[in-house]
Image 1 (cartoon, helix red, strand yellow):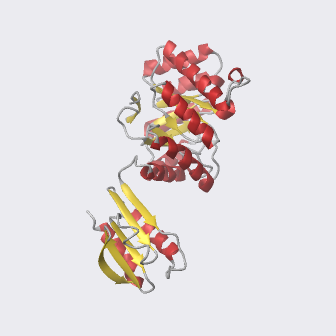
Image 2: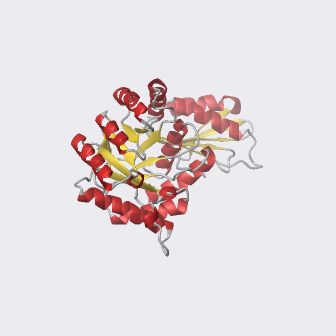
Image 3: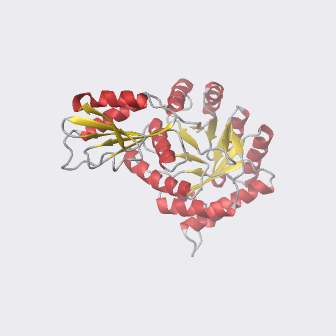
Length: 347
């Protein structure tokens, strides 16, 4: 079990569930725009939000953002240790630094001292694209260099009596990311922030993240995650929630399964599935529920017999079933409405 830390009121490590993070894409100097986006993320299911602090002009707006945010706020800092200290002093629930680009050990130590005085957690991050030159040596793989760099940062924190940390070690290469996290997981007991960095657009980025983050979660590795996408941050939350649900880390919400279409399908299944998915999301069901939408009798109750409720289509009818047992036959034109109504009534 990993060490327990807190970002605001969100526990990470220990017995706490894997939490979901994202990062705002608005200018931090515009607190209203940033807070509006944070509220969107909160509604979507985000639990921790990170905000970039690129310069000193961001500090006062940052304080307002922290004070009004419905989520714990982490300050993302690069290069300037004074910005890290100012963020902590202005209420940051956590900060994210890469000590390698902060500068001297003395500057990093000043950040640790300030964080200790304010009980502020720090994420120590190392990325494959910013490994310090001193760790790049002949005969060492990039993963080994990343691991050595991160462990040196951990030892520095420990030697300065600071252990309120979580760790990340990310690459844009999925294999490197998985290998690096597996290595770090064996070397220390600090909670791990999972992610694959610079993954790209929504589809590609979600697939990369699902493979990388999902592989680690299935290994029992990881305490908080961010799906990094070149897309609206709310889509990061949608992808993260699916990853947690599919890997069994979350036991609530709808798991919708549907079959691929083929020549046996006699209805517009793609449109039907999309409509049903939208309908049941509006129901805001919190309990764990497996819902199946199948395109024919072959892929009906038999293939989806473990679903709590499902529907299979012929050309003219929808066959609604629970746990593989047929309970109702309805006309195809009314099937979506009647099926959604039955889903809403499941206790």
